[in-house]
Image 1 (tube, rainbow, N blue to C red):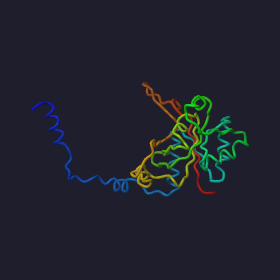
Image 2 (cartoon, rainbow, N blue to C red; image 1 turned 90 degrees about the vertical axis):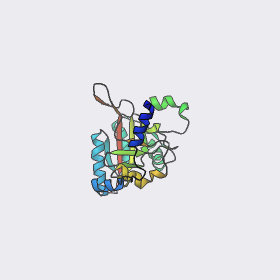
Image 3 (cartoon, rainbow, N blue to C red; image 1 turned 120 degrees about the horizontal axis):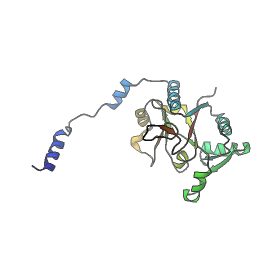
Image 4 (cartoon, one colour; image 1 turned 180 degrees about the vertical axis):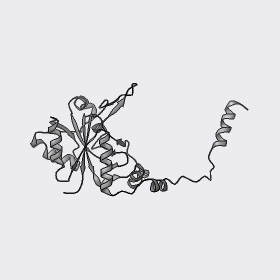
Length: 222
């Protein structure tokens, strides 16, 4: 028997039986993860993502634009990239310019304004599809309105998150959102500003992407 035949024989011998039942993933999560209220999930999400150096502000549907302006003003930022054609992008385009904040849009091919995006766009605003409380993770599904570069390039990334869209676990998010039925070209999981660690095991933030991640957590009116 050749070496190849011996290796293949071992692989066949170790292959799982065709009658082997699939693991009960849903059952495992049900027994190992707590059932939390919406408020508990929001609190756990916030705690986890703040540990990863993100900044979170509790806002309402009526005051988030005011907080957005305050966040930008505090950083001396007078320009932000927004998504025209979305409810939040159009609201920003309507409200921010009169307050001294220039709003740019991603309305042409990246090749035509790559230099401006990389060198003259200090902040961006995007929405999220959902979030995961267990790991403090934002779920973004980039599309034609909010391409992936909007969340990867500007130094300050500001994210709108509906507290009602926070799931307990990654498994719960996949099941509830029906990921098995289709995914976008890019699905982003973001758990803080960009970071990296060199060979000396020194963790550095803002090394190859947004230096700041700011979450506007939209809850009920207070």
